[in-house]
Image 1 (cartoon, helix red, strand yellow):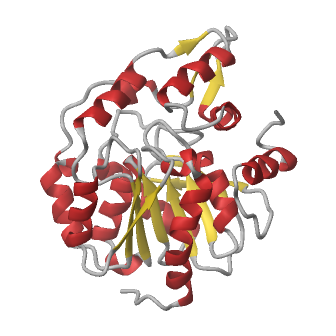
Image 2 (spheres, rainbow, N blue to C red; image 1 turned 60 degrees about the vertical axis):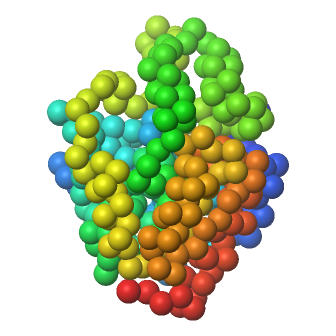
Image 3 (cartoon, rainbow, N blue to C red; image 1 turned 180 degrees about the vertical axis):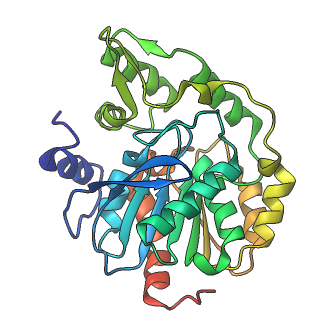
Length: 309
């Protein structure tokens, strides 16, 4: 398979996954100093269009949104961020990985990048960060998209992710790493999709082995984050005033249908969408289905047909 960072490789892979690419392009790497750290972003261009900021999940990175960005960049100025400790962004001196730390970073990067009132879309950890940002900066958020995340987390899914993250860390070969990840994705993705995504999520060590591309301290058990408590997250949902869309993967073991409906009821005027053939990692499991689910909402938000606070 061609390297997914090349134009033919990425565009062909996205089309093979069912993405309708209306304006083909590759992203530009950008860096911003904020919160005392260097943050890496992928900027997909179209600076004259309403901004859309993507926040990835735990142990992922900005390239997790590549296919989706190609499917939506004709509507927006798309930017995807590497969170602190992830991808090519900096690692803090102390393991400061609280929701409040991430939310402060997001606000700082939005300012440094000149993203005026962006729509903020986050998956999993990124969804919780997006939710907290929208609650604390209502006038600076055009719209909110939370993907397979919410105040409550289903225990079975939480434990499965913990086992994946805390188990094997170093792999003898890239093929071994791919096979390990395929078991986690529960065959919701093709091997080609997994290989492409892992090219940006892993790194080769000096010894020629492979490991994950994030701060290993993220795997450490830390005291509970008060800002991430279930009650604090429900309180934050109650402060949301911007147009909001809550997305769930049909096979998710993290966000239950009952939790999705409860979130919907907590935010007046919010919308919900369920993406079929997707587990927790919705935009990676079924990127074309995710684009189809969020595109109408983004069209309304960017055209002004949905009121913006």
